[in-house]
Image (cartoon, rainbow, N blue to C red; front, side, top):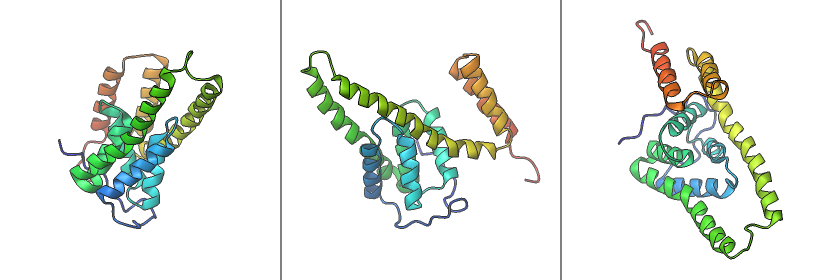
Length: 197
């Protein structure tokens, strides 16, 4: 399935590409993102790395991040595939996904081998460190969410749709899929092409 088209990269980001993106460059970028993404926050690291290279605007990242969350599967992997496909086609998508998965896979295998031999699981000191990393991950997730909120506020009805979604999911505890179907339909209706635009 072809990747959805993302917004062009120029208008809303001052940084110019230092080097054009290549599949190997994407592999390197996502390897780096995964290595510093201990405890989570991969979307935030991805946005920073892409912005530093001038490869994607905040608006285009927000589109990719939103679609990555809507598609079934791990968000970080979905995001890597979409960004890779957008920048370098199928090879870019494949190497971006390989880059985002490889460090975690190696680390998980190593930790599994070590902890399988430990009675009682991880030592208390390491458990405390992991809890601290979880707090840092929450902060990183918020840094990735802020640009998405900024883009949504610029869309017709964006603030109302965000508020209604939060109310339905957080306060009323409604099921995700019906809420998503209603919000997406409302967004399409509010932002449908109109004559004269």
